[in-house]
Amino acid sequence: MPASDGGGAWASFPSRLTVEVEGQEPAHASLGFFWRGESVLATADFTGRDPDPREIPSALFRRYLDLSVLQRAALWAVGRSLEADYLFCATAETCSLFEVSGEILLGQCGPFPSDEELAACLGALTAERAKQPPLPDPERLGRELSRWLGLFCGAVGPVLKWGRADSERLGRQLLLGLKALLWVNRAGLLPNLALLGVEVLSEGDCLRVVWRPLPAADLADCLLAAAESCAPAGAGAFSALERNALRRQIAGLEPGRVPPVAGILRLAAIRFRAAIQLPILVPTGQEHAAWKLALIEPLAASEAIEARDLYVFTPLRLDMAECGFGRVLEAVEELAAHALKEKAEFARAGGRQLDMIEAAPDPRLEEERLRDPFNWVCRHALRLKVAPAYQEALAYLVASRVLELRTSPAFRDHAFRPLVALRDLFG
Image (cartoon, rainbow, N blue to C red; front, side):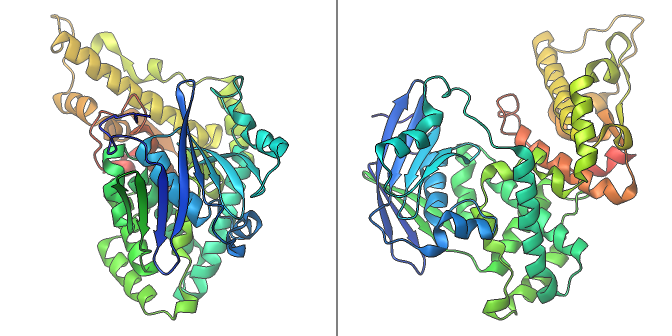
């Protein structure tokens, strides 16, 4: 069956998948691809491999990890490279159905299910539910991510002699760096996987994933550098000097004391969404009030940001004590979409048409709005009132949301530039 090209890397779907993780025996799976309406379901069957007690769901959950090694490799290879919409991955430990883009677990059963158990596992793909599969509880996902961060900080703090605040900053920046590397289009994904020690190779009808896990010091440096490249200042990025010091410190540890940096690769993509990360940034009670406000009073950014007739620009101002962090996610998207609309109108009209009584817009403001909408939002379109102790966390939240927006259909073709203006949000 021909694969969706989309500038893709593969001429047709392969029938076999091999996962080679350095230091382990290769794992082999048969692959299948099935059309379900406009969606593609991929299947990967690894059940011939001996079970690994460290990879059963309960063992993973004790570390608040979502994916076994084989599930992670299959999602990277089949889901991201071949653009399958769903993946059914069968291993000796469990059978799992994933929605690929968010790596969302939709169903799960034992490794050798009965027909009834298999039908229940695949229930999210029934005709009535295929277009809108059930999503997991975002509050639960946020709490679990917070617990993963707690375990991470508990491992980092004692060995690096860091306090809780520094350990949390490291955990957040690792999350942001991995998101910066993996939340990209297909053309950028394979080179970024290579930075993480992962190669996805097409060899005839076989797809090979070769995974050479990076040492913890190198992986941390790679992720922190990626975070710094997308948000250099204001959101807690580690400088090159700090990264070098951290690399030397981790590299000098005994093997049994190295922080579990690699565990971050086993988290599902949905946990990297800005809305899911709110519980690690702000008290839950405040966010409940914020989301309730969002339902009662829709954000009206378009009326606040510009009086079009005179090009008088007024930024949207939000007080976090009144609206909470969650409203910022709405504001960033709506304001950036406004800038994108202005760009389209400008291109269609061939420039601004001014008459004698209109004031001309600031050319620098105009240029940034048209070519760099996300920094324009930070510099000119949004102002946030929040206690200084929360500014870094809020800027981090904005950076995380922008990484999501850059891969959305509206912004996919727009060149992304580093968020150099995050501190201006609080000016």
